[in-house]
Image 1 (cartoon, rainbow, N blue to C red):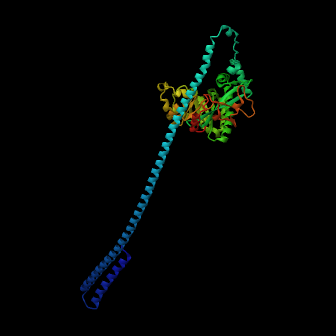
Image 2: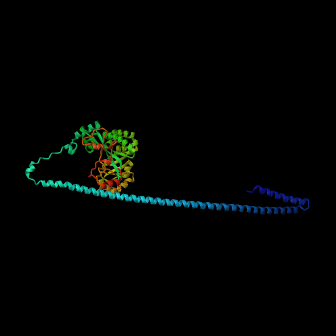
Image 3: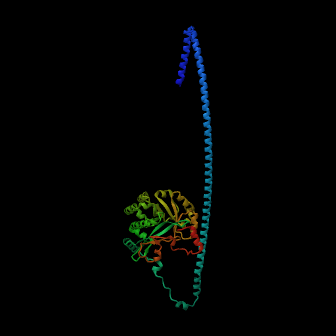
Length: 474
């Protein structure tokens, strides 16, 4: 776009040239043609002069601009170089920090690996030590038998003179007397009506630390003589009479009370509560249980409902709907009474199953390699991909723990860690056969697994104590 100053200069040059020609024509008496030629010549010289002067001025301006641009480019180059230096310093620090962190992590991993190998070796030594103790005790027990065998060569008169052995009472040798189905049904009805339902807690511990993480609630009934009725004795009778739903509802109530008392001291603890298949399929009884669980849904993350493997394999439309309603309220499920290792982890996870209990003997059985779809050592990893934890139950020896650690089993349960302990209200009388020492293991209603009665031979040696110390608390 032409600037206004340029237009003004052009007009001035035309006026000057026209004035010059007019002056020559009027004053000097030159003809009009000659005056016009002189005026055009003057205009030409003025145009050339203006063009040359503008070119020189533009060159000067461009030169100054180039100089300024050069100075700006130099400053920018210096700033870029400074930023590059700082970036290189930061990268060097990051690389050094990453290398140092990697070295620290690697050293920690190496130390943990060494500790793990030491713990496994220590557990193996303890298991061998226990085997030696058992062998010594067996040989010591065989000595009196040999002495008794030698005494059999005594005269017949001494045999006739010896008094006959006194038979042991049936209650002391076999516990509760044998009952027929009618007597058992009467005892179950009386226990339900008079609220003689006891809860026993057995801990589930982490491996290899053996820290208590969950408790399983085991149900026991007492008759009018305070004789204990085990679950395997009364469940069949209760299911046949339609009483198992009432028992499950009462057990749920007690388990929730126990869980609230446990969570006062430890927010991470949980309780496993067994539920019968008939309760799950009974709409009327299940609705009562569902109302109660819905009112206590705040405890759902710590309250696990446990079903048998056969229950999950024979789910009908009603049972499936009831399971879905429980899962929608946040409750998680566990599977026990496992007879084989054929699972569908994706389907179980979709139904809300988060735990599967497998007997240790079944996991360590070499025959399962050929009968199951997956090797038992890979079962824990397979279930873990779908958010399901594998629990090894019925663990009774240290050697089984050593073998299960190779299978990457995270949780364990069994008499090796602690047997089921009765949970009784304060001041309540102990049933027949339960000593006060058993109740002395309760802390606010929760048994302490660390003080449970050992099933294996007593381990009071220094090696066993060192193994327990290395394994951690719990």
